[in-house]
Amino acid sequence: MVSEPLLRVEGLEVAYGEVQVLWGLDLAVAEQEVVALVGSNGAGKTTTLKALAGALRPRAGRIVFEGRDITGRPAADAVRTGIVLVPEGRQLFAGMSVHENLMMGAYARQDGMGAIRQDLDWVYELFRELAKKRGQLAGTLSGGEQQMCAIGRGLMAKPRLLLLDELSLGLAPVIVDRLVEIVTRIHRERGLAILLVEQDLNVALAMAGRGYVLETGRLVRSGAAEELLADEAVRAAYLGM
Amino acid sequence: MSQILVNGLLTGGLYALVAVGFSLVWGVMNVVNIAHASYIMLGAYITYWLFHLYGLDPFLSIPVSMAALFLLGYAVGSLVLNRVVRFGLVMTLVLTFGIDMILQNGALLLWSADYRSITPAYAGQGLAAGGVMIPYVRLAVFVLAVLFVALFSLFLSRTRMGNAIKATALNPFAAELNGVRIQRVYALTYAIGAALAAAAGSMVSVVYTIHPQVGNVFLTRAFVITVLGGLGSIPGALLGGVILGLAESLATVTVGIGWSEAISFTLLVAILIVRPQGLLGKRFFGGVG
Image (cartoon, rainbow over all chains, first blue to last red; front, side, top):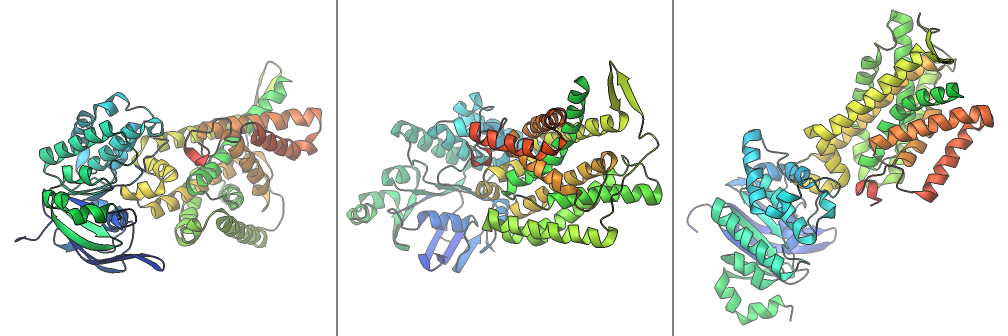
């Protein structure tokens, strides 16, 4: 890459107490790029996203976003710099309505109600299912609808970089297809940079142009989506064999 | 009989206000705030001294006591409680118990254990209708208490800060990811709880005699009402307050006034057996589902 990427991660190391799970991770995401982080269970994918979103404090390394070092910033600040995480397991506000959840996404925004309403209309247009259920408690939605609400809430924060963690987890294939289609549409319409984590290699590389393969906390391979998909070693490593 | 019901209802309104701040702090922060008793007591003393030293009408001193306790609550919340809130219920229980001891003993030192009361000029007057006597003071306390509870409910549902408090109560991790600075929300929640306790305390000083331990009986009731109405539920606090007020009022004529504590705890045990999430406990709040 010639110019400075949107996100640049250098030598990132994260540990939970004594147990280190990320060892010197380097990665980059350019403007308007969709990048996948793949790997088997326990490879450190979710940990990476959490560290980027400020929910975990790295032990070493640097996170540079839009040319600024944001390493160690708390989560509440990461949103304000434009990095928004749609977490694993949705993490909706179960006792609040769909509408209230989406509006909580816009909590940290400073660009006025007009812009927020425009994005709200856009989110309801992307996810027509949600528009019909805006008054319903988020905890009573189906799994697919909850995932839509979580993505919608993330979009309401007006991200510069969207982090999607395990989009497809526990969802029926039809719903996963629909989510993949919507994420692709979001990228096409807004040119939004996305870093996504997936256990399902095919789902991940259907959305992303480029990918990184993680294995027990270390980067083992990176490249264009087609290359990785064709690589026997990647398939083997990915399935944990 | 109707006099008994009216008395119970009037007391119930005040009980609701006593409980609502306690219920908020418990529901949002998972802190059983023993110091709530002291905040009620301090609110009562602020109103008492403003009346005795400056002749300020007790109802007009409510904003003063609320503001003072809001500041104290914010200081305690941000400087002390925030350091231990993630260590769980027992740790914060011990801490707020300690704060309560300091404040109550401080009040004993400063103002002695004397019983004191406020008697504004209109203290003895009332409204007589259909054989029922309603003292103006108690009516005003009831109306104001219910008004405060209603305003607080609007604050939670209609304002950005209120929504942040609700979101933090439901899922602090997600709230943080959405940009909510939860340490600040905790401090603010605790401050609001203290301010509501102060408002209740100011009104307590008009209706009852006060002393440094005056908050303790109300703390017990706040606990019972919170469980009865449902953790963190504002309509629940209102309903629970009125039920407890009526139950106590009926108890005074049936089994005797000495049994009111027993009535409280019987209600507590009964609700825990029959409906542990409380009468109006909301889904997904307070981890009861």
